[in-house]
Image (cartoon, rainbow, N blue to C red; front, side, top):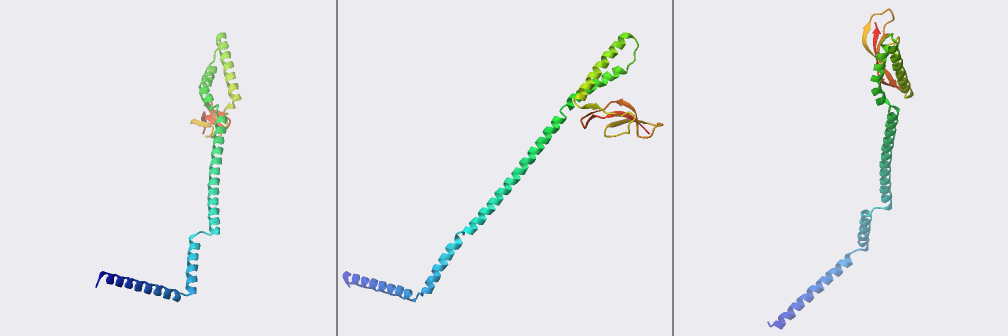
Length: 203
């Protein structure tokens, strides 16, 4: 067989195969029902719809995000308000008792002046000195009172552990639990005890 004959044979075989493929495709197209085609299209559309969120889903998601943001804001706002309240209370407390350190430093001076005033003397020079000490003492007490720093009354008062410190007890004709002697004065600043009064209490 010549080359030309072989080429013609190959071409014929290719044409035959192409015709058979075309016939097969036409047969499949004829066998395909319109209902099947519609189902395939519907399935594709449904798949696309399911893959994309609906407007309702998007709205619900936005609502949830908004609620979450609102809750975070409310929490931060509450924390900030609590911080401001605590800061305000601390400031008020510091202002209220700002003179406490001043009083604590001054109390030993008051104690020494009281000890000096307790000393008795008869000559004129002593009396003059005593009067001078008394004037200084009274001025200091007045200054303390201007700052709402006052001595705690204790003598002949019922013993109160909030204001008194019992260092001794003694049997007495008075009723029990009464302050019968005062060793060192106590002081309060407004409603805070700076130093309790050191006392002797009856049994």
